[in-house]
Length: 516
Image 1 (cartoon, rainbow, N blue to C red):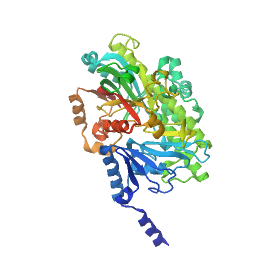
Image 2 (image 1 turned 135 degrees about the vertical axis):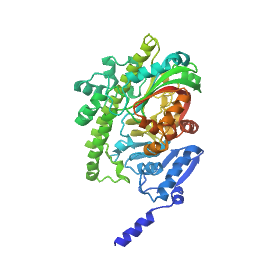
Image 3 (image 1 turned 90 degrees about the horizontal axis):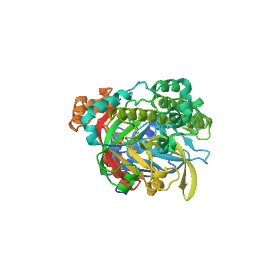
């Protein structure tokens, strides 16, 4: 019997050529993953990639096949397919151009589940550990020539104002009661406490507050981790950058966002829910493993721990996730407040006179209930976006009045020292990807590999050569976040533009970077 079992296992390991037979090219920048690539696929998979990005995706699969599937994360293509096997999924399991291996779901994977189907699930792996990690872009009426004479001083001042690094503690005074209220109210709390402007909320996904948030579903341990960290940037790929407009592709859309000409200065803040969100995800995974046994939910990869949306565990997670998302919006609002103070002080004026309005604030690790058309019928879906950004089209009721004609602004953060982009949502994207697009560059090298391959002095010298001021709390991180560790953000954005799932509006390049 044992011998027989061994034989069966041998049959399972496929060659790279076998794996590729399940992948079919749909267009110059998209591929279909056919059913059968992994067991029990309920829908097909699809991924978007241009010729440069395809090589990375296929190399990863080749490496996996030649190692007979031993070690490391599963390749992104296989993770997209495993998600296509989850109960209740509709449409397709979608991999965006910045897709790379992650925990359970690939980062850059988006999937929607039918809420009316009692079998449908919610999976923390489909949201990610940094709940509502997102990007906010603040404009100013300053130009590069205004910043240049004080570039080093203002970079230092921003670094002094915004606490950064792994365990950094916030400048915003907060007690336990405040935290409960912030978790429940999101940006309404920031507004009440005077850390935000009323119009900031208008230009924020979900208006900066998820109403189903329930702080009682957030564990004591999560709150303990979150209490000292409000208004902090954190570490990893998080950053605050002073950027200048480098190219404008769509003048009408850019003007609606208050961007008039090249050289205009903006500030981009990329951060999430810090230790609080991470703990919410960890707590939920433990609960859900038990729920999966009880409800007999079978998945291809145990990292895809999940629970039925209607179950107690599923509902508890969604309420705690919403509270963590609210925390992230309060966090970004607090850092916006600190940024406005820094600039006002540097130019001896007020943030208002500097026109420091929020262009938009997007989330790229979140699950939300949305209305979409599936097979000609309108359905309520739980849309998981992990390393993926909502990109709603013009005239969608959930986007602000200012952007009704242009479509929702989509903020794509580059990596340290590379450019960032602002895109807008399209009708085609709404139909093909449930209104989702890429979120950034996406890793090409693992963190450990980056540390082995790159020296931090070289990385800093390369930035200085480009005239970029940098302040970083931990040199080790500089290598992990170096541009060489990532896919080219321009390739990623061009693929989204070519596929029609979002359109380029303008491009920004950094002149100052602040990191954990």
